[in-house]
Structures are given as C-alpha cells and as structure tokens.
Image 1 (cartoon, rainbow, N blue to C red):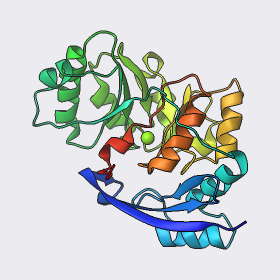
Image 2: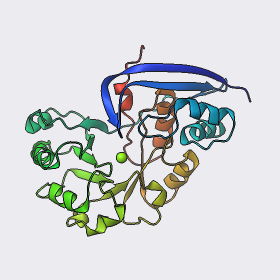
Image 3: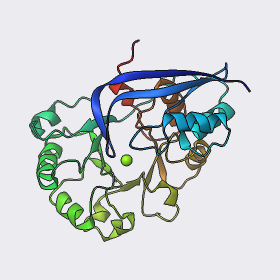
Image 4: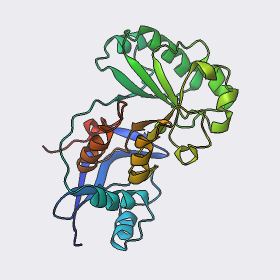
Amino acid sequence: MSYTFSEFQCPLTTSIQVGNKTISNRRWIEVSNSKIKVDLAPLPGLHTESLEESLEDFKAETFNTPSALFVKECFEIFTSTQETQVESNDLFYIDLNLDPSKVAKDLSSSIYKIKIGRNKLAEESIWLKEFINSVPEGIKLRLDGNRSFSLDSLNKYLHGIDFKKVQYLEEPLQNVMEWTSLERFNELDLAIDESINRRRELDFAKYIVAKPTFNISLKDTLKELALENQEVIISNSFDPPNNIKILKMIAAEGEHICGLDTLKYFCLEN
Ligand SMILES: [Mg+2]
C-alpha cells in the first residue's frame, strides 16, 4: 500500500493547557491511501510520542504509538468516510473572573463538559456551586477532573454541590480506587478516562470515555460499543478534521452524546 503524507498546522482560537504544555498551535500529518484520509495527530502534553515519532512508527509499520495505530486501523476498517451529524457536548473552561450565574444563564447547548480542578480548589468550588445552581433546567453537565484531586480535597470540593444536573464526574481522583470511599460517591456516576485500560476491574464506573486516537484502540472501542458493559462516550484529543469525521461516524453507532466539538478551537482556513 502506498501512502501520501501532507503536513498541516493551524493556530488555535485560544491557548489550551494540556498536562504541563500550553498549546496555541496544532500540527498534524494527513495520511492518504488514495481512498480515505486520516490524521496522525499526537497532542503535545497528552501523547508521549511526537508528531515525527508517530510518522516514523507509521512508516516502520510497528504501530507502537496510539496515534499511528489509529491511522492504520482506520485504513483497515473504513473504505470511505462520510459526513455524519452527531450531537456533541460543548467543551467549557471555568473562568473565575466571570460571574458564574451570568455565565450559566448564557448557556445555549444542551450538554457541557467542564474541566474542573484547574484553579484554587476552594474558590473554584464556590464558583461551581453558584454556576450549577443557575444553570437552566434541562441542561446536563459532565465534570472532568483529570486526576487533580486527592480524596480529601475532592470531598471538600464537592461539599454542597447539587448533582441533579451532573451526568457524571470524569476521573477526578489521583487514585481511582478511592472512588467508593468518597463521601458522596453513591449520588454521582463515575466516568473513567485516564484509567480506561483498567475498565473491567473498575466496575463501579458507569461510563468510559473512549478516545480512539489516544487511550483505547479503535477496534477495542467498537467492541466496547457492542458490549452491554460500561456506557461509552466517544471523545478525542483535539484531533484534526479527518479524524473528527471518522470519530463522528463511530459515535453515531453509540447511544451517548459524544465529546467531539473541539474543532471550534482550530482556526481553519475554510
Ligand atoms: Mg478526561
């Protein structure tokens, strides 16, 4: 099989913080097999491989990196891709300088994914409490903690927060095994992301956040969608357009609203 490789990059509409990296520009390599195009797109701060290493891995056909494995699997599974419309959650970052009740009243989507634990926890908890209380009825929230909390700090953070509008809390604890020790764990559903490889053992988690370009292979994602086990949310790692198109096709096979609205951060030319 012969492939053509084209490198792309574009600025982001706003800088994003991923792990210990601040990213203001997204680079990727489009790989075409003349039938479909898929993007090699490791995200700095999340993937351990660089874009160059991912390309090398793909060309050497070793597929040790998740970004190269995803491209290979797409070529195996799909012979053509199509535009698929699916509903996505809207990614949202907390800004403590803004009035939480005003921000809440201005919401226009039906479901939001909110990154938590990125500010001073005590202040953020107060902000979030007021925000959630002002969120209009009918809007659902997914809170993503990215393992920023100890058990003690999470207990304090969640104190007094109304969970009625919260669909799930995504992997907040440094040690996921402490989930069932959380004071309010039976009032909330857990989604796992960073610990997805331990999903069988973590049977107290209702949801898994599957990112086929990063934390789980595409084939395993399709298996999880077919199994009546944990609920699957298809998500991504700030992937470029070809990958989002493919991931939307996969998300359309699932039952849950996906997390694929990140192209809004790309300043694409057309
Ligand atoms: Mg997450």
